[in-house]
Length: 323
Image (cartoon, rainbow, N blue to C red; front, top):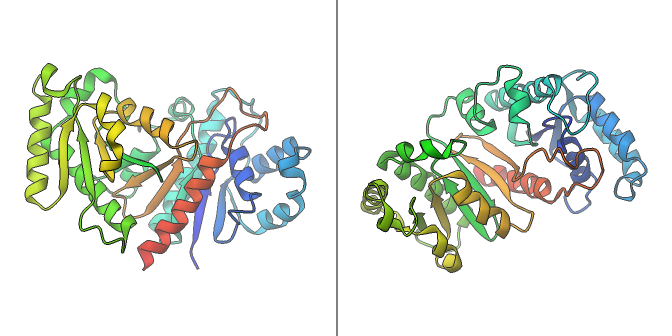
């Protein structure tokens, strides 16, 4: 049976720690998982936390499991926790390259990616804004989207990692409509046999108060909404972003125009259990909804809740895709 792969992310961040925390969490289990990263890094992290109550009692059984379930990318070399370093960027990139190649060869059913440092990746020539764009390019997908997922709130981003001054020019009817279709397809799959004919989707305005301060962006968003309705989607908007989330129970999902417009409510409402899902890859990919957290790396206090949620969701989406 094909497994779900987990890349370790940046060794100097919390990726290895939250991966180990997830693996020793009884409510999750290790069946069907494989780790992609440096075995040396895992052993170093295990020694760091061997006296921590959350880890010490499970280390013996986990060590035996790791012997058979790690795809070793080789040594990372020496590194300092909580700092941007070129060799850590190289290690994160090697794990990503192995993971995506296994996806391409259909040897994994899905991929969970631990957090990376974009700055460290750029030191080794990484030319993509983030892991989402890298995976889409490697898998040859031009229509894709980032979904911030939790049981309580789901939002897709029209633009992701862009300077705010460049967002306006990227708000086109085609791009907004593309994200609505990707979200609609995901929600239909997730709802399964719930009896909902079509997911209800709210589309956000770009500007404060919507049309009151628009420079034409809301007109383009409305064109996308009208076209999507003609194609059978249940979409409404554009709604001012400062008001719509208080009525979020009316909708099954949201389409936001830029990163912070989506991620501020997503992280607040996810209760630390949010998941980054890439739509449109033709493969399952999830990730914790947070970064490398260099400020607490190596201290043994990072929460694994988002990683656990990412692994559980990846497993479920892989099962759904096979059914």
